[in-house]
Amino acid sequence: MIIPTKITISEAEWEIMRVVWAHQTVTSREVIDTLDNKMNWKQSTIKTLIGRLVEKKALKKEKYGRKFLYSANISENETVRSFSEDILGRVCQKDNGRVIQQLVEKSVLSQEDIEQLIIQLQDKLINAPVEVPCECAPGQCDCHVA
Image (cartoon, helix red, strand yellow):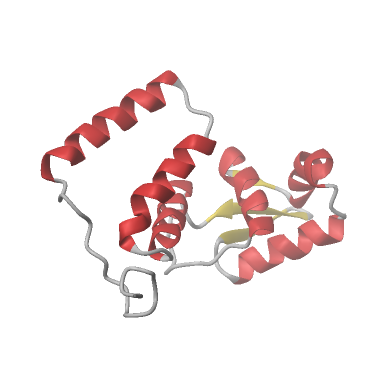
């Protein structure tokens, strides 16, 4: 799989990508059928979103007989990682813990997920600073506002 440089994917495009990631290779009909009940989108909307993802190089389009097959050019793991970094990059570094706490609070997690989080947190605790430094420009967060 070729992973292009950072690609920005809209919320609607995420829905399409999730179908492609789940099936590896799909037709537009399969995407339409999969999202029909969940999204209540018109076929033209889904085809437009697929077209945008092809233009962005997130999807690869191959002719197969009379139809086109679509497959992902970007991995789900890397896209989720990039999305997570983007979220954390939008807030003051001092607030990363709060953002992660909110994600954990809002998430449905298995016992195994929770055990893995505990292990990761215990590993991070060993070298964690007493306080996380703010790296924002003065006035960009409330750390420097009097």
